[in-house]
Image (cartoon, rainbow, N blue to C red):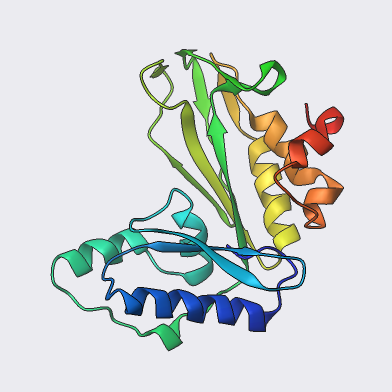
Length: 208
């Protein structure tokens, strides 16, 4: 998803580049093209994933499309009921991965029995999970317990809704990263879009 502060023209140019790349290889199916944007506003192709990404709910919330449903329909021989020009982005969405891990101990995974697993709901909030109270988080799988996604008219509203949803999350039995995620989403630098891959290191004292 484009970073905050990108102009509509730059967003449009990135979308057009993605379409040209897919057409150039005659690609059919769900997929994601990723770009990097520098400070001057120039963007560069990074990679293409020929599948739905774990972040696809963000695209679904801003587009209003069920990408999984359309992937299955196309695989069954149906044609899309819309064209590229019909796709419009509406608002902003942010997704977090709710992990059984300990941010205060180097983000080490945590295992155990989920004595309670209470997920939030609310306006603009979506939760994707397969866990229930009584399930075990084991060492055999990735420790992600859920994806929590929030939509808002603006990026700040989406971040505030997501932080509020995480505050209402109630998990007992394993250590988890909900508090850490709330601190990230509420941090002034995050809300201002002042982000880099060094974000956690730069704000370690406030986040951990």
